[in-house]
Image (cartoon, rainbow, N blue to C red; front, side):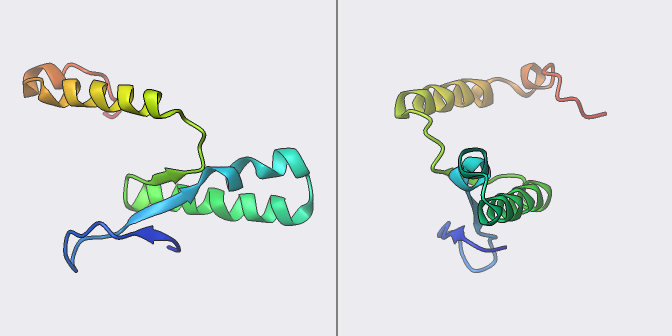
Length: 94
C-alpha cells in the first residue's frame, strides 16, 4: 500500500498506512495535471487504507500540536468510560 510506518509490534502486525494530506489538496492550488493525478492516487490510497486497515497516519496536515493534544485527551476520557457508557454513542452503524 505504499508508505507505511514501523509500528514495532512484530512481524505479524500490519503497518500503519501514511497519508500525505498536502498531496490530497495540492491540486486545488496548482491545478496542473500532475498534481491532479497525484491527488487522485493519494485519495485512492486513503480510501483503501481506511477500508482495509481502519486507521491512517496523516502527515502534512497543519493541525496544531495543541489541537492534537486536546483530541488525544478527549479520546482518553472516552475510552476510560465503562463499556455501557461508550455503547450509548451513536456510530451510524446498524
